[in-house]
Length: 290
Picture 1 (tube, rainbow, N blue to C red):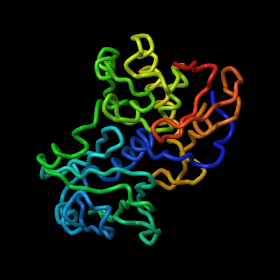
Picture 2: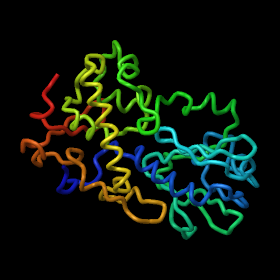
Picture 3: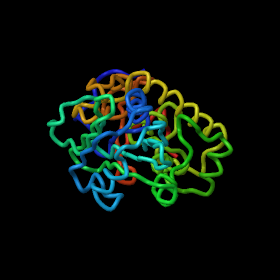
Picture 4: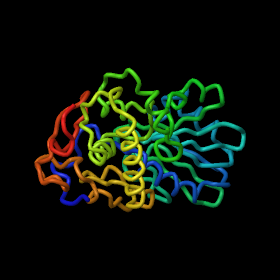
């Protein structure tokens, strides 16, 4: 499935999602694991907003060895040798780069490693962040409220049914909530619902076991394809891999950003509506209304 181009650039509300963060994690893991954070630079207050100051972030990271690079939903979790956790979120425009020119505009954080390599956080809109948490900080952070990971630890049908029970909100909005299942955003929620054949306005609590199974199966298929393709880089080039290359999943998108184009299944024009302020794309024939 898929084909064509995303019309009109990046629709509103799109941001790096689980596949883009997972690919970033894999690149960073290869460079950071076992290395010491030898010197650091953090130059933007907003990037450090979850700590007291940029200086606090740098002080807590200075000289620490990276033990593991993990991910939960859209968050990266970097475990340090003193038990602290460096947590970062890409926000709407953030990306990590490896051995990049440190004069690239909007480079707000740079860590130089003990082997001379560097990792940099570049974030034009500064919705992303870099934070350092101890266990108490972590327990009170937004990360503690994130639900089961859509890729690494997805809920089963019963678990998803329980989290949606009684919910009258549209399933599209609930997939974006990060509590029933974590990691999906506008792009992949639209793609999942298309493959599952479910209208985005369907109340979440009304889905039966068969439909929920279809949603969960579609989540795995959509994410696997996106990760294999290096993530989705749209026309604005806001998301790039840490090596500077673009992800190639855009051509595999079936509905997202394709208003008016023919559905790859039935040929009906793809529709666009707004669900809870989010641009939403679907096939009105393959995804019959609630």
